[in-house]
Image 1 (cartoon, helix red, strand yellow):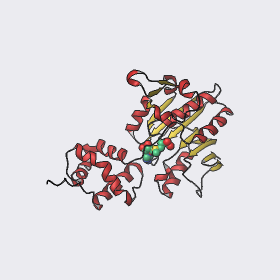
Image 2 (image 1 turned 90 degrees about the vertical axis):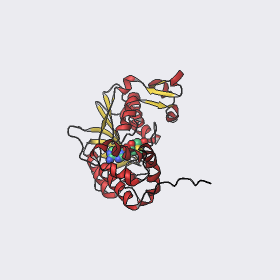
Image 3 (image 1 turned 45 degrees about the vertical axis):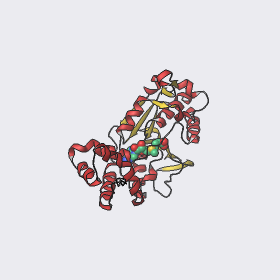
Image 4 (image 1 turned 135 degrees about the vertical axis):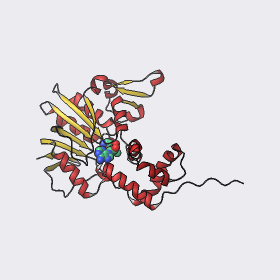
Length: 270
Ligand SMILES: C[S@@+](CC[C@H](N)C(=O)[O-])C[C@H]1O[C@@H](n2cnc3c(N)ncnc32)[C@H](O)[C@@H]1O
């Protein structure tokens, strides 16, 4: 009986090369217990190039003409999970806060993945800003995620936490070959601008100041020093009195930052 072909093995040295690639590109540290997960995620790239070993794949990655492939590796090894109105209590609080503010208001979803978070911000602003001018910036490290975000087309399953009535007020629901999908309405999409920003690196000049920054479900991937560095940079972009939201599972406790807690995982710029 013929034996099954064995899977290529991702050795220690090659895993270290990938750890370095991730650290350089995103600042994220891949823990050593992630080795088999990493091997599994990259296996399809070996198949794509019809390669038998990670050795061949990693030597390709070092060549300048494989810059796109290196980006793809970072995408494959990053968690992009997101959905509309994730951690709903944040949007309830933000709605109340926005209704008491004058405009114009600028909101930023840093690490926005495929765009559900900035569109949730846009819908909350549309419902609560009472005629004030507002705009939303969505940014991420991943160009492929930003490409999806710009389209604004999603599976209905992503819409499970929409407040009552908002889906039909702010989105078009697909029919025929678009059945089961939704598209954020054009006027709302036009209020949201997307751009590539790596929050570990110096932030772009002329980014301006924001009233609200969402930095959620990203800090968990960084060590304490990097977390502090990222949050300090972003806090610098908040107007005094503006709000920073982090994920409910994240903490910036003990950092010396110009922020005061106002709710669990919500901070006001001093
Ligand atoms: C788990 S998603 C969070 C999405 C959204 N904020 C939410 O809470 O639903 C994390 C995102 O962070 C992005 N990311 C990873 N490293 C980054 C970096 N250094 N700068 C900007 N974005 C980064 C990933 O591409 C991914 O889309």
